[in-house]
Amino acid sequence: EAGVAQSPRYKIIEKRQSVAFWCNPISGHATLYWYQQILGQGPKLLIQFQNNGVVDDSQLPKDRFSAERLKGVDSTLKIQPAKLEDSAVYLCASSFWGRDTQYFGPGTRLTVL
Amino acid sequence: DAKTTQPTSMDCAEGRAANLPCNHSTISGNEYVYWYRQIHSQGPQYIIHGLKNNETNEMASLIITEDRKSSTLILPHATLRDTAVYYCIVWSADGLTFGKGTHLIIQP
Image (tube, rainbow over all chains, first blue to last red; front, top):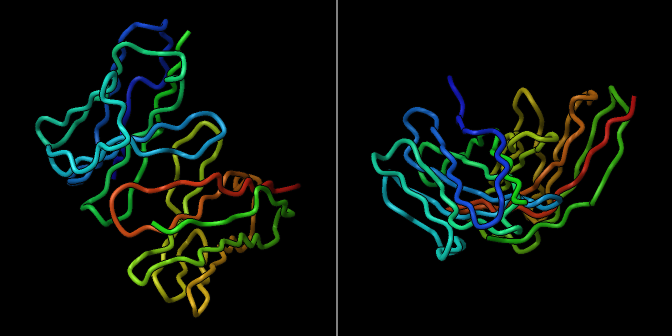
């Protein structure tokens, strides 16, 4: 069974530029999560989708971050404009349904210069 | 979700059992105990979870005390590849709340 796929694996941008990350969850998983992991800390939830609807985006900085999951499968997370403090690993996870075990992708490491 | 307390770091000799403790004294009746680990530069990897009973799978065993206020993750025969940060998480729904975890270092 294929795991959660993410791309790109690494991205370097300058501050005030825009960036987008892509996630393809495990086939059949209805719930998708985006986490942000700053160096030395545990992952922090940014947003949770159930199919193509948002369940929780309370910790998403909505002035610069946006996410969508239009067809209930793949998802994209965008940052516009990026700040230095957005340098982190962005992790995508999926689960079969809301309270099931979450499985994580390899993450995208973002460096903002 | 309830908070957890874990030691910052632990050492274990290769081939020995690694026992990682976790305190979760404010856990609620419907909250599960989940364990993940994160090897350097990789995404978190699911290990095991439990509600009340002890659990075992091909990776590890999870021992939960009768009052559910603490648990222990056991890696029966640790190898160098088990060096990682181990997260104990108490979870009922929605996103996982990660703490700082335990950095387990397996010594050759």
